[in-house]
Image 1 (cartoon, rainbow, N blue to C red):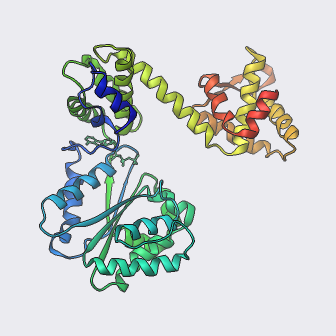
Image 2: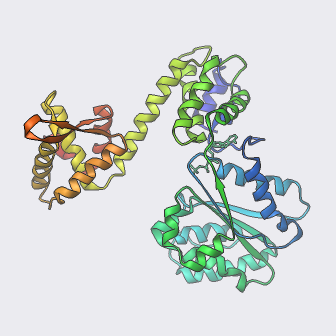
Image 3: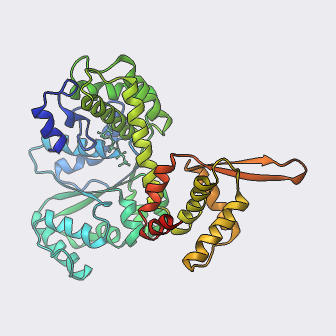
Length: 397
Ligand SMILES: Nc1ncnc2c1ncn2[C@@H]1O[C@H](COP(=O)(O)OP(=O)(O)OP(=O)(O)O)[C@@H](O)[C@H]1O
């Protein structure tokens, strides 16, 4: 239970009935518009009910298309409808993003003690095999956000898990790998790739009408009757549909809008609350994107930021950006990247919307590109200042 939940119980809310029903981890009783994926996954996993090992499954789809929810839903249903013990373990590879941690989580699940760090991977694997064997069952291992693991640590664990059945006689392991980034499969050994992808399941994005339906149902569970203005859900669904049909984003906006309404003591969630929620989320998004940028991308952005702040209305040409960037790296005692690279960085920043770049004609002087910051300056400042070096530096300029 979150702090907000505790407070809500005390402060009779006009908006919420059960706020937790809008949280991203909650898996609702029904998952509309995912029947096809639910059925296919159920068919693939069904052999476990009679004691045979299901095929491994590789699930792919953009963010917020219900991959995790559908997987948990089907596994829960399987457990409910079977006398036989269906054993599954869910591991999020963003939270457990090393080979060691994934294996240690799995070991914990089968009752094998592995210290937090320290053992050689081979030793962990050996103990894990003994633990799995003692289970005498089929163990379905869900590796969510699997790309995080492979990009950081390669495919050793996957290789091990796709081969481990050769070492087992009493138990069997099936894998479900989930990702929203197909590029990571380039890092996979061909055998691992084909073994993980025995079955493949693609989750298409939701459209606006589907999102509206999903949101209606989630809102009915979470919010009090009449606590939401008519057009709110339509608007939220339309926003999320434009962002690749991302249901996670849709729920995020709805929850934030309801939180804002609640905090204001309003009796209904209105379109104004949606606008406020949206700008809060966009702000966080911009700050997060900037925080994770490589140093030289940050330095180019810092150059544009400083030019915008100090030169006010003056047009910021790419020439000015190059000069400022060189000044910055000089002061930091670093080597600059090539101008070609700077020009690529400017395009990348434009694509993610942190800056706006456009080409203007200078009449007989030819053409040049001018840039401006595309998000509030204070968000750029907050993102850049998360880097201690840059924080210190920007303060001194
Ligand atoms: N059909 C649906 N009905 C109700 N809620 C849904 C549906 N699909 C997704 N959701 C909800 O949307 C949110 C995001 O879904 P989920 O975590 O399954 O997405 P995902 O595809 O795994 O995304 P990511 O790649 O970001 O992990 C969750 O809160 C989930 O409960």
